[in-house]
Image 1 (cartoon, rainbow, N blue to C red):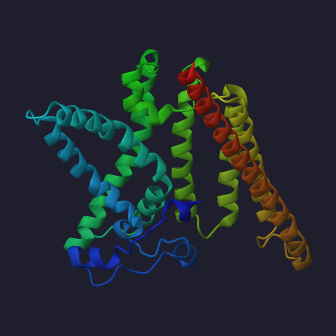
Image 2 (cartoon, rainbow, N blue to C red; image 1 turned 90 degrees about the vertical axis):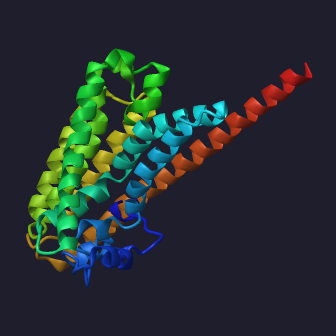
Image 3 (cartoon, one colour; image 1 turned 30 degrees about the vertical axis):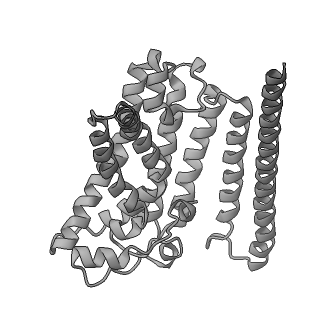
Length: 308
């Protein structure tokens, strides 16, 4: 999951070394992190091409602001105002939510090795501290802000600004549904802290992850936060599958010494994961076909109305 979220199409390492005056990006925390794409101890190197999005953001804000003040063309001015509104709120929230896992892991790694001995290392350390503030403040601020404005969440203008944070939630269930996106982000922050700071004790990693899964299952079962009932069931199913996988992984720790048992459980683990992937593939294909059929029906209906 983290590796997919950290998809890179351009190696930013050489560019950062040139700009920050660093001779090298440093070694990875360990081989596991290097396999996942976290090849450095520094946050900016680990962010990769995600860094371009955060650089693009202020540039896009400045450009749309200039367009909004373009008085010679009303169309350009209206376009700039509309795009700036989307960028200021929805786009930024979307970036943070979608890249939260990568930001959290990169930040936790660099926090272990904060240094201020050179210009480049100072920039990396300041970026790490800024990222830490962003990771903690974003979900808590949005939760507090949206809970206080709960009556306005259905309004069109308000949804355009902040809808990215609570889309697909069933607001009829009350303010408790707003905990879902907050838990989504905080769980990933906890995962990052666990894998970075408890990377030598796998049993503690599994225990922490199982505990958070139990809390999430209780929340999903009691609140049912999603608008689509099927999505509530799918989320519950996902949590149960992850718990089964974690229980299986326990048997691959030094607590189980029998190699034959580990060998047989490997097939059990593969079967669980295969069932999980096949089920989700079927759901995705079925949803795609249903969407295509729905659009075809709408298109036919429009043509029929035009003929009449």
